[in-house]
Amino acid sequence: MIYEERIYTIQPGKMAEYLDNYERLGLPVQKEVLGTLVGFWHTDVGGLNKVVHIWGYESLDDRLERRAILSVHPDWPAYLDVALPLIVEQENRVLIPASFSPAS
Image (tube, rainbow, N blue to C red):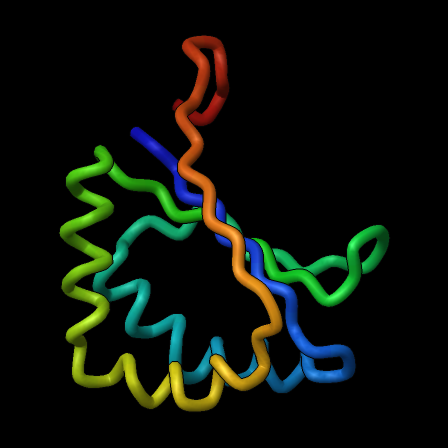
């Protein structure tokens, strides 16, 4: 299994709006298409205004397939319309667990 970590920087003062939009419009589509949500967090100390979420995939090919399906899902544009204006920066990482990792 591999994990994708996504980190978004949200405009100051817009976190509640972003999280509400995500829960109502983004999360249902992503759970349907992407499958395994490992966790979803937002920061309170350190780098502020950050949202971090991690998704699990069987392989890089599985991730590519699921992301392609997500991009053409009919409900996805409604989420992007409200989310993208609130996002300042995005980072993505593919994480491959070490053999001794509890999440492997």
